[in-house]
Length: 126
Image (cartoon, rainbow, N blue to C red; front, side):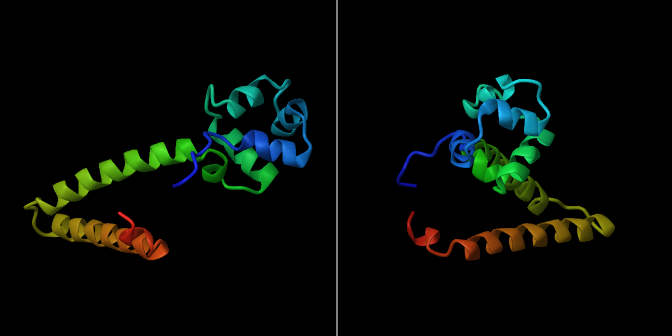
């Protein structure tokens, strides 16, 4: 990524829509603009239902509204997926457990290959 990614694009979407923080807060069910201000500055992350509310208001996915948070969560999940995959590959389970392990490993393989085909040029950039 060439440009530094903003932690939150809420403010820019709100401004583009011509909404005040108070108006956006009202749309989300807040009594005042305080939480919206904190979410825009990422002093705190919005609760799940509020994040979905932002998505509904702006017709933009939560991961696009909060790209830095999404990237942080995504990287942590990838690390845990690699640990799980390693544990599953080293498993010596038999029978039904082995079938379940094979299913999980197949899903992981499909997931990884689907991601790589979604971004074919990124593989050659490293």
